[in-house]
Length: 227
Image (cartoon, rainbow, N blue to C red; front, side):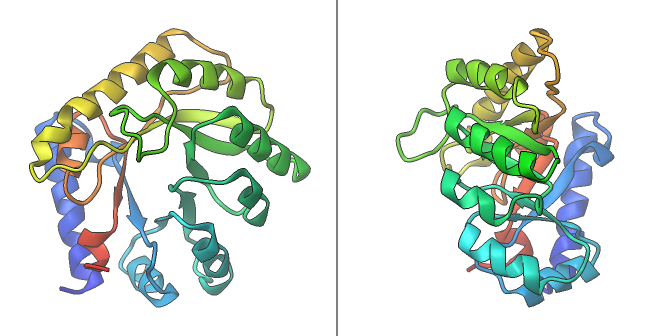
């Protein structure tokens, strides 16, 4: 199917999953994961109504910032090295993958040079897998507190990537745990911190994520096809 048809199908599935959980479908935003995809695919998706795109690799993102002239919103969703932040400072709407203090400080520094504030999510390695980035559940609370003191960062919520399962339902406990952690952070009432966003769920498991509270689902393959 075409990118346009795939998008329509995904948005219908998002609507159905939200309604099944007695949620407003408008409370779930689709982040189209465009890593490895050419600018032409992003433009095609934009023309079909998609406005938010997620990139994993900064070496791919930077050229696309120049190539894609349409008014899209960019999110950084992959593991991020601190020395790469300067290349896209002020040009992305949100960074999903803040997992350590040094990275938060560099984002704050680069956005501070521009007199702007960057919306970020704290990435939590709920599964504890050695191959995945993210702070621990205990570390997340500490990291949120540090970020709250940085004037050019605004914490908007949490992000996670569960283990890969063939059965989407198997990921549900990890999504539920991130929601519980979000609620625990919110209960601390840390000044300047919001827990309004939960970034979780991808092509194979986003419906379970929505039913557990996801507000941002990161979907690539189901929109653009296999890489």
